[in-house]
Image (cartoon, rainbow, N blue to C red; front, side, top):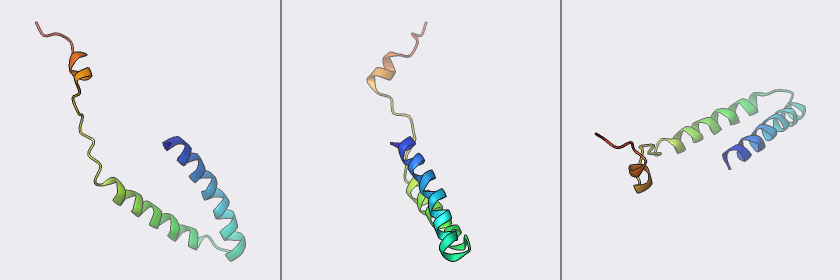
Length: 66
């Protein structure tokens, strides 16, 4: 899902950039939208907890201690 959304976002960014430039003669609106999207993405990532969770499968895959 991550790779798919990245490709769709890349396409839309390039396409919308051209469309906005053709309609307004400037990229300013797109820069503001890009900054807003970046800030929203950063805020959405703050609550993510990326600590490693030890599941039974991971516990059993550790090497035996002597």
